[in-house]
Length: 223
Ligand SMILES: Cc1ncc(CN)c(N)n1
Image (cartoon, rainbow, N blue to C red; front, side, top):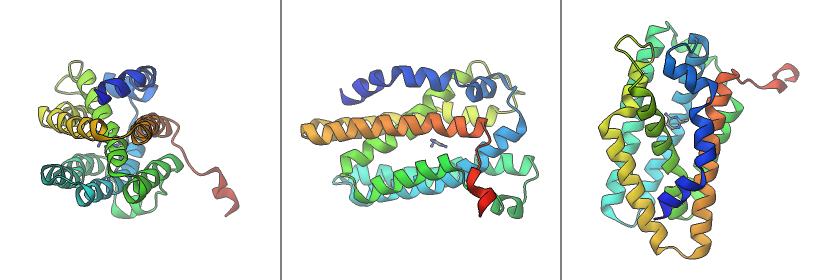
């Protein structure tokens, strides 16, 4: 199956994601608030673009069941995941003014813009492959962390969201869709699907790394 193959192809990168200091600290609860708050604010921005890419996939899908799945996922990215974000934003006492003063990081902007470009101009099967890691990598990380998180773990709500069986069900559906599209695709489209899956997984690593580095714009000093 296409998705088994691309998952195996990205095994080293996936290991690097699990072993990234951000995720190790997220898992053992030692991640400092500043880094997690940075991540949450950037992720709220990212989710807006991700949801739009999913809504575009719903429009471009050639199968009504697939269209419904993408539309539901677009809704969930805003509704369910945002509830999670708002919980942390409230806990950290961040105001709307604090949030609007934060500039979208280079990595968050890069990932979001790349998703938008795929949504608007890549073939539909390539778009499906581009959004798949956004589901699957998070479920993989959430599931790996859940067994180690106690009831008092500071990031338990985050871990529980992505380790939830409903999220695993969404991953299974996204994989089924991507495999169906890969089966029907010619070699050129399949190669573009693989490249999109790898690129999105690289962006997933970058996103966590950017939060770990509290990534800003070095050019800000000149403008
Ligand atoms: C960067 C990123 N990638 C994926 C997800 C999970 N939808 C997320 N919340 N943020």
